[in-house]
Image (cartoon, rainbow, N blue to C red; front, side, top):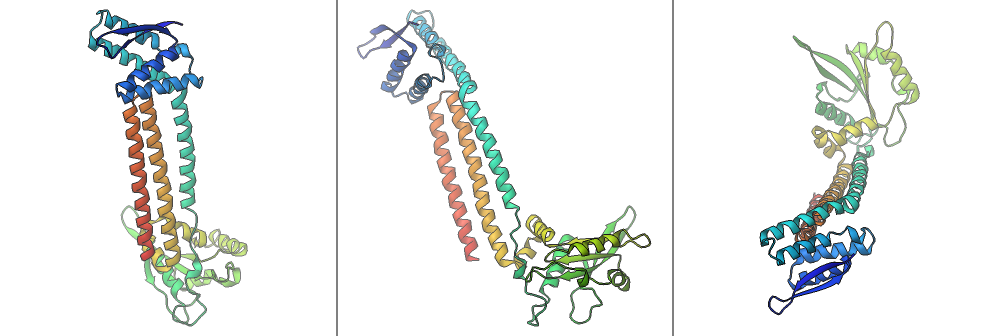
Length: 355
C-alpha cells in the first residue's frame, strides 16, 4: 500500500510529498506532533505504532490513507479548516472503537472479574469469627468476676431487644440464670413470651455443654412459669444435649420452645449487629481491638481495589479516545487517591493503638 504524506517544513509554506507505508507515515506524524509539542497526538501515534509492531492490528487497518486524503483535500482548497479537523477527529474516534473492541475492553473486563473475586474474598474474610470467649473470666472462681458471663448474656440479649425481667444473682437460683421477655406483637395487642435462660461458660476448658449440665429442663421451665428454654453457651451443646432439646420441642403433650445461642451464633451476631458493638467492646476488649484493626486493613484493601478499577476504566477511556492528557490525569488521580487512602489507614491504626 502506498500513500502520500504532506508535511509542512520550517521554511514558510513549502510542502514535502513522499511515498511511505502506513507504519512509516505514522512515525512521521508522531515526529511532527512531537515537534509541535502536541502530546495527545504524539501519544496517539505512539499507541498506533506499538499495536502494529505487536501485531495486535494489521497495518492496513490503520486509517492513515483516509487521513492523508483529508489533508490533500484541505491543501487543494476543497475543504475548509474546520471540516478538515472534524473529519480527522472522526477517523480517530472510529479507530478508538476498534481499539476498544480488539484489545482494551477485554483486558478491563478480565480485570473487573478478578477484582470482583478478590472483593468477595475480602468480604468473606471480614466475617470470619475473631472472638476469644476466654476473655470473660470463668464462673467457678470467687474473685468478684464470676458473674461476668451472665452479665454479658443479659446485655447481649437486651441489645437484641429482649427485656430482662430477672437478672443475674448469686446463691440458689432454682436452675435459672436469667428470665427474659420477648415482646410478640399481634394485630390488636402485644404479649410477652417468658424465657428461662441458662448460661454455661466453658470457654476456658473448651468442653461442650452436656446433658448432665442441663438436667430437668422441663421442670425448671414450669417452676419459673416460663414459656420456653433459652441456652446461652460460650462453647457448643453436645450431640446428646442437642437431641434432648429437640425432644423438648417436639414433645406431644407439652412442647417447649427452645432457643440456643451457642459460640458461633453469638460471634456472628457480635460481628454483624451494630447495636451489639458496645457489648462486644466492653466484654471482649482484645478481640474487639483486633477485629477493628482487621476491618481497617480490609477496608483499605477494598478501597484500593476500587481506586485501581477506576484508574483502569479511565485509562481505557483515554486510550479509546486517544487522549494522552486524560491518561495522565487518570494516573495522577490514582496516585493522589492511593496516598490519601494509605494516610487514612495509618491514621486509623494509630488512633486504635492509642485507645
